[in-house]
Length: 191
Image 1 (cartoon, helix red, strand yellow):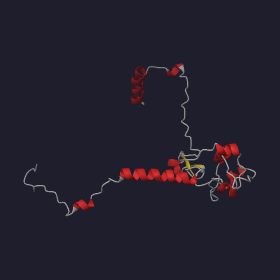
Image 2 (cartoon, one colour):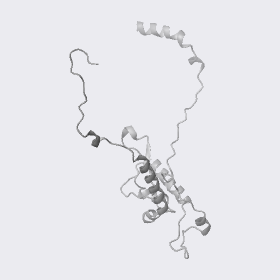
Image 3 (cartoon, helix red, strand yellow):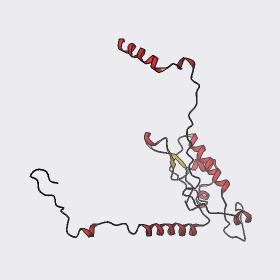
Image 4 (cartoon, helix red, strand yellow):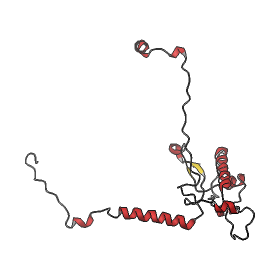
């Protein structure tokens, strides 16, 4: 209630405030619509992966994020050369290429080259004309058992958890702390 000699509170709503209220009654229908759109996209791009092109693994920018790994725009020409894939061919088989990016460390070059080799080993290439398959196209048995890659990323990043190294405690460090703390306090006070 009001204290002392203050004005009684009354709510100063704008006229026709009902027009400015935001509702989310369309949320369940939007969810269904997005789900249907994803299914339709997957059907259209079959047998290609739903996630799109294969992306490289790069380090984040700045000191704050450079320990984190993330997806880059495309593979460098050097990485493609290491994996023996021509840049023009790479774009046709679902590999993103970025001609501007440079490799600044041997580790990232090796990591992404291995990523490309792993992708290449799992790749199933459909012939343009089923009657006349070319060299490099997959066999008829492989084509019959092919499944669409439906996850969010092609070859997702695996974050390795750092395991702490267990070390045996030497005998001279196995001293009860309560017996040494008063002595340490006296030493600090006198110094």
